Every structure is written in structure tokens, then in C-alpha cells.
Length: 201
Image (cartoon, rainbow, N blue to C red; front, side, top):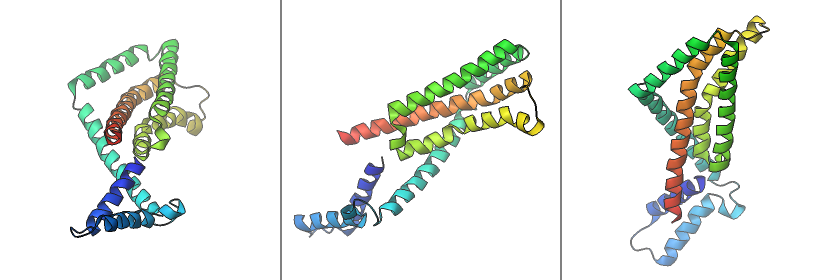
């Protein structure tokens, strides 16, 4: 996506300088000048490349933050999602004193998160896309919060054993946001893949 954005930058740069009376040779010169300004002759080391790259990354983060906020809002105003959350909470309430089922739910959640992240990284080549990196950074926030909520009492209050009710409440709070985050990642990845495929046709 950065290559596509850089191409867009070159096109915009040439459009601003191009005049109707310019010849084909002058057009090619303008294109070359634009690439050179990005540091093309030095293998994109130096020039305006870093500035364009950083500017695009900042734009991605702003865009993703806004879309992620909208995704959360849309989910929590969706009656079907709220019903799913209610049934999850009811299930966790019923099992919150059962050590086996709480541990099983906790383990399945961790396995699901790890498998999803492996799938996502492999399928969508996460670290080759700046936009997907921005999406990933927002979508996995619940994982960090989850770890904080689970282990903070042990660290701060020197608990030797996790309280089952505490684990159940943590799962009830985090699982809905994990679902939203991972669903958001898939939607964005599919959308970007479609754009990329069209541009490559």
C-alpha cells in the first residue's frame, strides 16, 4: 500500500507541474524529477521519501482510529450484538464459580486469539502493509488490556491464585472487544485486498 501511495504522490506531483503545452519528453522529465525528489537515484534513501512515508503513516493511524471508533459504536448499537454479549455474560455468570469451565473458557480464548493472529499474519502479510499495521495496533488493544486485568492483581496485591470471579468478569469485558477488533481487522484486510487487486489488473 505504501508503493501505491507513493505512486499516487508522484501522479499528484506531476499533475501540479504539468501544462497542456508540455511535450511527451517534458512529461517524462517531470515524472523522473518527481521520483528523484523521493530519493529514487539513491534507492529511496534520503530525498522526500521519509517525509512522504511518515505523513502517510500518520494519515493511516488517524483514519483507522476513526473507523475503529465507528465500528465499536455500530456494534454497541446493534441489537443482535448486544444479545450475543448478554448471552456471553449469562454463560459466564452461570459458570463463574466452576474452576474447570472458567479455565477451559480462558484457555479457549487464548488459543482462539493466537490462531487468529497467526492466520491473519500469514494470509494478509501483515508486516508488509502500513495500513494493516495501523489496523492491527488498534484491534489488539483488548489483548493488552486483558493481560493487564488478569495479572495486575497478582502483581499489585501478591495473589498466588487467580480469583475465578475476577477471571470471569475480565472475560466478560474483553471478549466482546476482541470480537470487534478481529472482525474489524478482517473487514479492513479484505477491503484493502480488493483495492490492491483492482490496481494490479
